[in-house]
Length: 329
Image 1 (cartoon, rainbow, N blue to C red):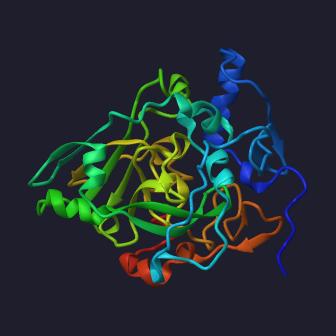
Image 2 (image 1 turned 90 degrees about the horizontal axis):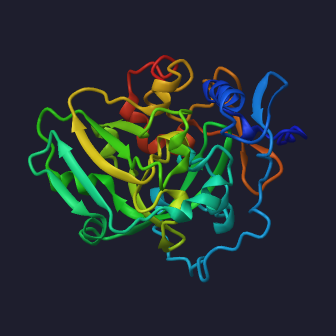
């Protein structure tokens, strides 16, 4: 029998401690953010972030909920109900546009996603600086219906559209020295007003081991629900690694660099104790301030058990054979 959610506040609104403390300082010293922080039951929460349904009055662009494409079966699909388009596009973290879950939907419309250039460089034989539409047209797009588990203990089921990252890496031909893949988000505070605040070190950066990046499940998403990816969800190009916590899914990518050494990652730089490089979904390893054993699926009122590797253990557990998943989290 599933446990009931606590009445207030929902577990999805847990705010990372360092971000909470920075936000309080900004409120005190500069008045950059509205709202008040509260400590509840030993967890840190932001008030004004209780919405689990679309914003009142929010209407997606006409025809945004497209006729779904027939999804691929097997490891690229799930028979779980898909999260509604409105929820996916109005409830998410994208701190470049603000700290509240609905800030990206309210503010990201100012992001100009065309023209957009992506640089693929580093330890590759064929570096490539390419317009994003040329990049997308160079590969057959696939629909992947994946579970997405946020480190804050909420989850969704999302029908992504995109290209396997491994196919792109094949094209640029990694050298024998390439061991990791680093990703960088656009840095443009005029378009991304959240970057005017020092809540994180900008630009947002992420990284994978090369074998993780080459895994067939790893996707560069260009759309969802058969439509072009909305700005608030990371247009025009974002990373999707379904067995890892959602913060690994870096958005609005402008650079992909293959490296010899592990690249820096934003949340690990922000708080190494709480956010490891790998960020694999592991219900047996709690976040230092909350349990990861269960999650709240957006649109549901009860919690469900969290699955190891977010339910993709059969496909990816072999990548970590011999590792201590409690130490190398």
